View (tube, helix red, strand yellow):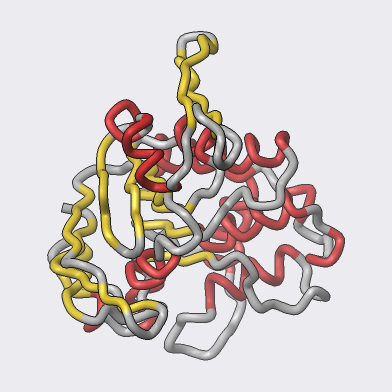
Length: 264
């Protein structure tokens, strides 16, 4: 067992409480959390990343409750990337990555050959060595996202959590980021959970979809099981259509929402 949520309950909007929530991750997967704006998918992701506390229940990482871990211990196992991390725009890519590796250390920050080797290895793996000396202010949105992911990799986590990894990116950058996440799962064996507004990209790149509505899981399964008219209509309360298009050896699922108030 890699990750497990046991009897979680989410409190949101200061007055509603979710039902008990249970799910587990038993192998490396890309899992997309999907749902409307009030689905609380971001709340769930933040609970899994120790940013928020659940009203009740526990999150277990390899049978260990993540709340009893010290911050630097948790950071070695779970990396959480927000949409807008607070960081100085004057920092270079290299400096930010080096800081990301050291910030949870119990010892004073001090550069050593082993740390340098880790940063250089990650830069090469993510294929962003050419960005190392650029300031963060000079990066495109897609480059910034790839650098954020690379920074998280410097402390070699087992689980990677990302809020909306492709929000605001152009189509090339979206494919670049999602392809990188797929590499992390396939080559490094990472478990990756992400919140996603783009259902078509979620269907294309995810191994599993976790569908939430008002803080409750209404469906959990592979794309074929969850990407259905019945479930998507329940999630978004609008008429819609789904279809599949041949794409090389892969069938690309597409979500086609109808106009509000119009029949599908």
